[in-house]
Image (cartoon, rainbow, N blue to C red; front, side):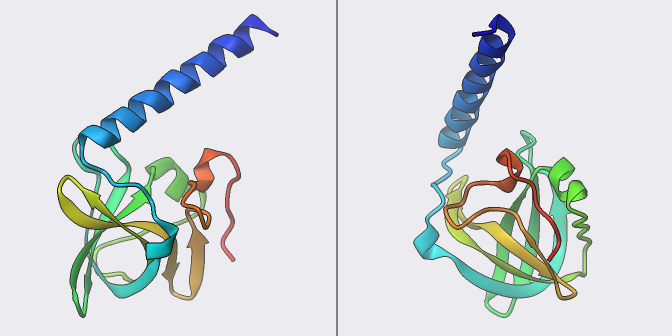
Length: 135
């Protein structure tokens, strides 16, 4: 096996281990496909939390506010997903606990009848290899 390939694979495994360890330290529960549901509301903020764990948004719904975890900014840009304060969105995703608070990990986002898929049915991020297109 090529030494460069082995070195790259090793670096990827180490990086994944560090991400998992960081998520565990921050009290992130795992994606549970059985908890997938949809919410609709208006974006009150779009932000990247301390530690750079991807783009998040706060969605004001009829039932209250929801902290929604989307994904890396580069991926959202790649799939053409631009979200601003005041946008009306429908989000399908799974409930998690993050930093001791309830949140949602987005699987799909619908904005103006355009749907973008961020994760597959098991919660695997599409930026982890397969890509995505607006449908």
